[in-house]
Amino acid sequence: MVQKEKNRMKMSVRTMFLISVALFMGAVQAQSKYGATAEDSVSCVQNLSLYQEFMKQEALNDAYPAWKEVLRVCPGASKGVYQNGAQTILPTFIAAEKDPARKQQLIDSLYIIYDMRAANFGEDDFVMGRKGTDMLVYSPDRVKEAYDILKASVASAKGKSEAGTLSAEYQALNILYGQGQATKDQMLAEYVELMGYIDAKLNNPDLKERDRSYVEQSRDNINTIFFNVADCADIGRIVTDMVTAKPDDIELKTRLLKVLNGKDCSEEKIYRTLAEDVHKANPSSESAYSLGMNSVKAGDVSGASKYMKEAVDLCDGCTDKVKYLLKAGQVASANGNHGLARSYANQILAIESKNGEALMLIGNAIAAQASGCQAPDVWGVYWLAYDYYQRAKSLDPSVSEKASERMASSTARFPTQSDAFFHQLSDGQSIQVACGGLNETTTVRTRK
Image 1 (cartoon, helix red, strand yellow):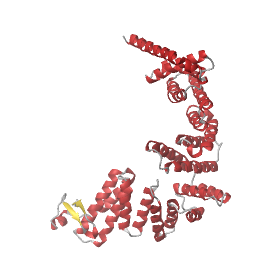
Image 2 (cartoon, helix red, strand yellow; image 1 turned 45 degrees about the horizontal axis):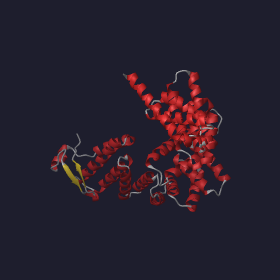
Image 3 (cartoon, helix red, strand yellow; image 1 turned 60 degrees about the horizontal axis):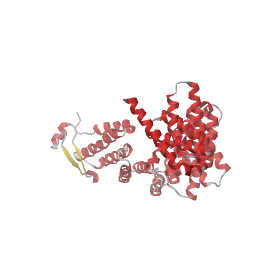
Image 4 (tube, one colour; image 1 turned 120 degrees about the horizontal axis):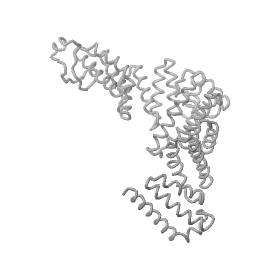
């Protein structure tokens, strides 16, 4: 029964394309993209129809012969033939093939498909980016060739390059670096270039949400590679050389400043000068943050607070908003302005509700209120701070150790059961904390 049904399906498909030929033969013969001769046109339409129908049924083995014939007879008939070949048909066969020789033939066919698509439909930069990316996967022994293809693609397409192409180029360069065929200076120069394209994509208001995750993943991949290769001494030296070579290139300086911040190289000699040049030419959240960080390292808390506030104010929807808010909150806390620190933390939580660092900031701001309170009110301050530390620990594993230490510190200041009883308080009781301008509800706890 199964075989009969399959035969019936194939017969139906054949009937369909024969009807298609009869209906469209006249029009097809007049269109050179369907083949050089009338016979080619008939074969093209037949096989195109067969291949498309089998693709709809996900019957790749049945689609494959017709697909190959379309490429042979009428390579300019349909872009979809190349898209399906490169994205579905050949990758599926390559993954399933056990014979090394046959697998290599399929891989070579994949590369040819990309060349044929570019020859027939253009879009060379995009297509070659895809080819170079696949070469990196299927032909690791040809990494230099893959890199050259990817670099040429990006050099031409620039910011229009696919996120995956940008990531693949840097991955290929990193492999060459590991083989001694590329230098650390090249790694930094290309990092600056590629991250410029990535940042432009992320800051584009028209970027669709479904594409944002791909861009962010590429950014993270490139960052991971770069940060494993370079240390601050290398970056500082290379940045200095690049600035010296192009002292008036503010766009370059802006990107280099971002590199130094990404690696937290704010103690490098070039850092302050670079930040001041960028901020003077075009004040931005990045340059203000840089000057704030430098002020922090210099012990200038007042200056740091000023610049961090400016970084937050200038960051209208920018991708680093949370980073700037967090550092501004930490500086405010160090400056004793706990109300402002808590305000920054709440702004973070409005963006990332599970941000542990923001919750820690609020806990610290609350605990700082204890110095102006007396028992039993002071206990409420520690109970409430404990709540925020506990929440931070449960929501954000990255602050777990730090939160546990603060929880232990708060617990040490809880009252004994007898002290709590003296004030008509018992474990588990709900209580309003009003000391120090606070106005939140927490739970009574005692030291055991």
